[in-house]
Length: 263
Image (cartoon, rainbow, N blue to C red; front, side):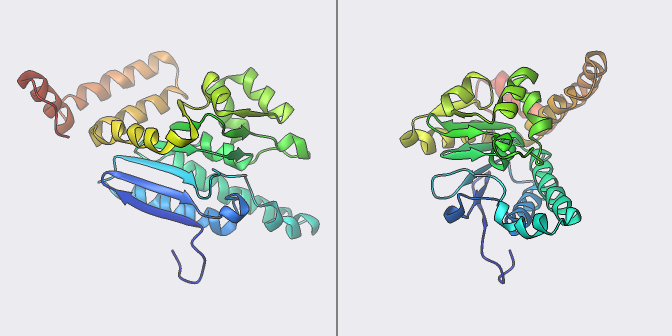
């Protein structure tokens, strides 16, 4: 990160896990241009580090993210500067697509507000664990807006078209438990147990082989854009090759020898 700018996104490592933390607690971790730039830098760091097995993203100060920092766009909107607005949206989409496209699984750890651009950040992750009292919603429609960070494209792929339309059209908020019920998050935890259970979630993946999770992620993602027959053909070809990988060889040897594999 540049020393001339405040650290709005913190990056850290813990063993095989990489951690991203949005760090604007005084703004409920709202996303402005600098936050998005630093998020993109953190994503690129993970992308080029083969030692990472799993990544997480969360917010500082008890909130995930309240969305885009509209105050930072106010001058451009008032001036009718559509080019500047579109450039900001492009930067947001680029950062979140980069997060989504990371070769390793990405887990969102959600507490407090995950609204508007916050839910769009959540949607860019492979998995999510939330406190059962988290406040989650698209809510753009409440202010005459439409999400430009992926909600109209990613939400339906995760929760289904009807539920996505309901959340987008009504601008309603749901809690972590409701988000779990509709498949928006994978797991929920009481607020005082969120950190511990999130760490367990991370460890479950960090102990797996990088080749295995990376390849499996690619196959699952491909299934969203191909017909079943094509997807099965791809799966057959990829799995046939993967059986000769270091991960598979170690796993098969461990199974045969009655021990835990060491990936």
